[in-house]
Image 1 (cartoon, rainbow, N blue to C red):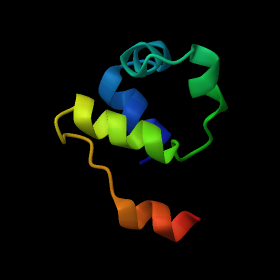
Image 2 (image 1 turned 30 degrees about the vertical axis):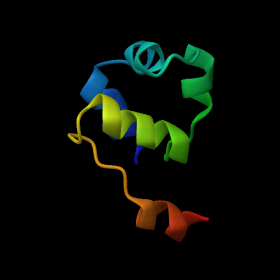
Image 3 (image 1 turned 90 degrees about the horizontal axis):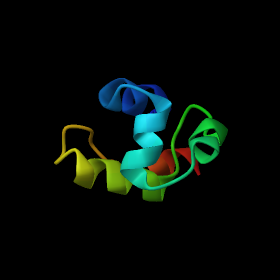
Amino acid sequence: MLKKAVIEHFGSQHAVAKALQVSDSAVSQWKGVIPERAALLVHQITKGKLKYSKDFYKKIT
């Protein structure tokens, strides 16, 4: 899942951090792709509007 898409959905980096209950600095350290565990949470929080793809994470590891 791309960081850019997550921030666009939530509206700001701070809103992403708040939704995932992590610090702003944790979110700022993410590069282009968010960590897999965070992607699973985003998928759940957004009720699938942002999709988690196990295959996507297999390809990048």
